[in-house]
Image 1 (tube, one colour):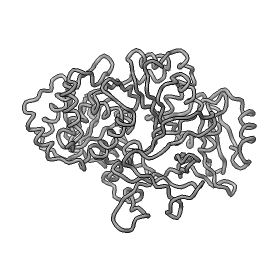
Image 2 (tube, rainbow, N blue to C red):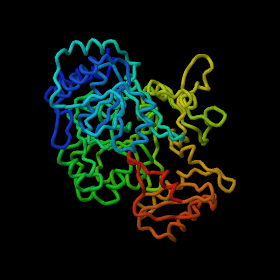
Image 3 (cartoon, rainbow, N blue to C red):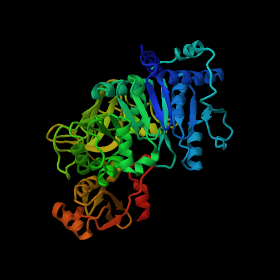
Image 4 (spheres, rainbow, N blue to C red):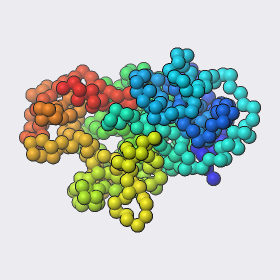
Length: 496
């Protein structure tokens, strides 16, 4: 029985010991080497007497971070990766919530305070007794935590999302089967390791024997070089945030680099993918599989998916599809009843993918991890995502907006996402974002691109009721982005 994620690595290292597991710049590691180094680290952790404890990993993105994830898992503990670039005050808030028993780091500057630290050194680690590690691992079960990922909190205190081995194993089993991932495949990793999108890259690779290439971050600002990297390394699969795909499409890099012979799968998740830029990708790779995955960190990365199987107009919304395997989606209205035909409601999730709640924060946990209102017979928790969705004529889910993005303006309920979808389909619009000025009661549209303001206004008036037309349009050379590659709505809100 597979009750710990590292048993996948045991099997893969046995089947494909010399296959490349991770490529990181000029460095690479085979599956046998990856397993050995993870066991070395695990042994050092076991010797410290730690079991089922939080361990922080604080080092820049590299293959060493993945060694640490696996070493912590082998030792029967759980990890939480700390972004080394985030402000010290935020790091401190995370540490106060997590209270790690150990911090693994490569940093020479002490950012760990008084916590016990382990100075990670890939080259010098050696294994003396594998049996000691395996014996401790066998004391774990699949309901134990694998990791805690911290997301932003409305109160300013980051929330630590807890995810078990079982949740990740169910998710990756589904990914492998749905997208037919094999040992001959290779992933081009974009997501930071503190972002849940990276879970798919890391653990699908470990499960299947596929290689994972950590793409140098600088290439994401050099689209032609980025695509050449994919081509030269024979990358077959990418799972990126839409913003990264949008930049490549907008700068016409797809016309300069031929990827149709190598890139088989283009998966995306994290925010809305406009069909205008997706259509450019689909035209460039006509035989590729394109899939829109949806889901917050609280449900192990993704809970619904849509494999693009028909043509879409540039201004149409792209479905988020249907529930992933072993996951159930409930769309509830304000009365906690299933929505009727054409009705918009909140997307709620049940199944093994659901987080065990927020680490060391029972109050926040109780707000969104709640009893299923459709079941009064036994305890059954669902996660309320805060996302509004509806079903289309095909029975597919359509993302409408965040509940936070639904506004009341001039007496009307308005979904800002509807405005964004419409504007994204315009010629000469590269990217856009809509926010609401609660002080002045105005809808504000931020756009990137060469479109003339008068044309944008005319287009909006021709396609929207008067009360949905933005009061102000602000053109920008570049929209601010978060570290995860999403539009930074908070910065835009602060700028008005």
